[in-house]
Length: 182
Image (cartoon, rainbow, N blue to C red; front, side):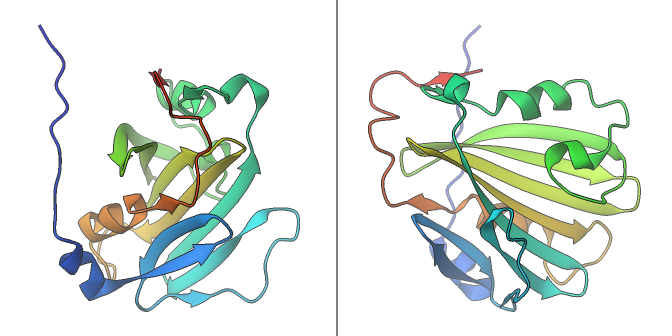
């Protein structure tokens, strides 16, 4: 039996209809067109936050790469937790104050030659969390959207498309040669 990667190709025009491009330092990403940049940021974290509407928030975090993660593409900690979910607190995934995870999935996404990990979590309070994690040579970029599962301004499909459409100004030589996916 062989493993196959089935590409998912969709029009950028579709994304442009409901999202816009933002850049923070070396990370270019999309936010919904209704997003407003937060004025009060957590000074302990490097990143930027947006409020989309009263129920949807998006946060970008930039963290230094751990020595153990260099040369490997995977967020080993997140996957290890995800495979043993059993009603873990969503705080384990960097979402402060979040409730218990009732369902969690992950998938790898390759975008313009840069791999990323997409985590898809559902919480017991009818909230969903999409988290897209990617790396360059020195940093880990974590893009998180928290949204209502029932009826929000944007569909889960729309949020999934925009959270995975990212670009890094440079990845250094991190992805030259073999990339290990765990």
